[in-house]
Image 1: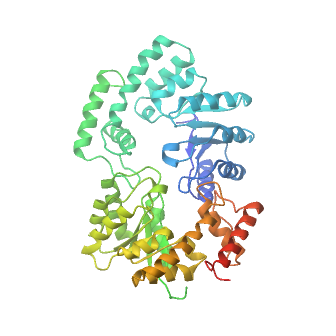
Image 2: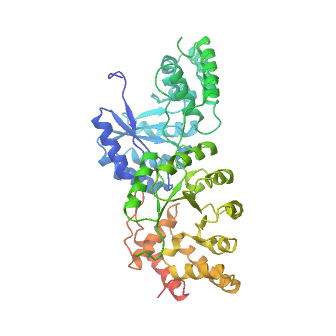
Image 3: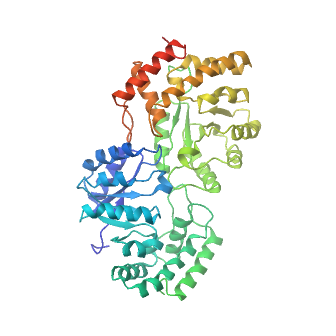
Amino acid sequence: VAGRVPVLVGVTDTSFVESVNLAGHAADAGAQAVVLSAPYYFPAGQPELLEYIERITPELPLPLFLYNMPSLTKVTFAPETVRRAMDLERIIGIKDSSGDMVYFHTIRQLAACRNDWTLLMGPEALLAESVLAGGQGGVNGGANLAPRLLVSIYEAARDRDMVRVTALQEQVLELRRLYEVGRFGSSLIKGIKCALSCLGICSDVMAAPFERFHEPERREVQEILIQLREKGVIPS
Amino acid sequence: VAGRVPVLVGVTDTSFVESVNLAGHAADAGAQAVVLSAPYYFPAGQPELLEYIERITPELPLPLFLYNMPSLTKVTFAPETVRRAMDLERIIGIKDSSGDMVYFHTIRQLAACRNDWTLLMGPEALLAESVLAGGQGGVNGGANLAPRLLVSIYEAARDRDMVRVTALQEQVLELRRLYEVGRFGSSLIKGIKCALSCLGICSDVMAAPFERFHEPERREVQEILIQLREKGVIPS
């Protein structure tokens, strides 16, 4: 990215030590911040989660974003836990992938006490409304495929250009078709990787336990990409 | 354990490579088998899970037990997946912690095709009925505290001594009181660790993100231990 945008690196692990190791590696590699979800095997209660955050933050060599991803971790960063995390200077924001806009509004209100706090949206379909609601941006899977589109809807929302937001939102929603090719929870990451491979941007090798799409799914992705190009969702 | 019982080591990780590394370490340390659950961050579909098992099994230096723990992994080893896993010689059994006895019966029926397959029960409260139903034993948290009791109920079930099973089951259920001291999902592991510490068997240090019980909970555990001793659940 050559310094044009900040690089945030996920360091979540069920092992405290491994998270710290990953953060060290991210810092050595030039990342600007690390991103940490709740440990995701034994679910922590909120006081346990807060203790965990308080213990790990001083061990990390970079500023920290919380990553709220309850569908995968089984644990939400409850608003009161986030409020307490805001007392730690090194925690500078949250990426919210819950898809729960009421939660987002709640966190946005709490963040009023920290003018250096950044609220990032996970699902791209909610990027515009989160920015309209006071968010600062997103970390969106579809931005790998359609960076211009996602930047445009971000700018439109930031500028309160509702005509443009409304039009671009229809385009953003088109990306979902790529995520509906697979049959399982992995369909989103497989669809993105496969599309990136079809576009010649990167390989579609997946981390275990997942395998890349087979030929029939890949052909389906290629078909969708043609349509997305025609509609101007992704560049020609 | 000085060879008196087999040692099975959990090697589950979300990283394929880490699971293989852990299995190598377990083998070097003299374990008899390793135990593997479904990867527990992105949930795998059943065909993905089967591919994962088929790919990792040849990489492991020890025989393998599957570990069915859907409450923590979000993924069940579906019966059809277990049946396919039985085609792999190196997979020699399953530990079932689902608490679902219908599932257990289903797997037990499937296992009829492998006379070397071992069915182990996770929750100790279901050990007796699983052995009565054809299971071979358990890997039970409470056995750390009350080994004699758990061996006794295992033997009673194996010998179809229903009078004894019925009496011992009441004692086994008493152990649950230790698991109800904490407030969160961690209460079981915290309760066991705290009780082991009170009994002088080992330290109650917990792996992150968890901390040992504080003094009020510890006093509660001590109180319960006194009562469990009076009832003969744990040794005096």
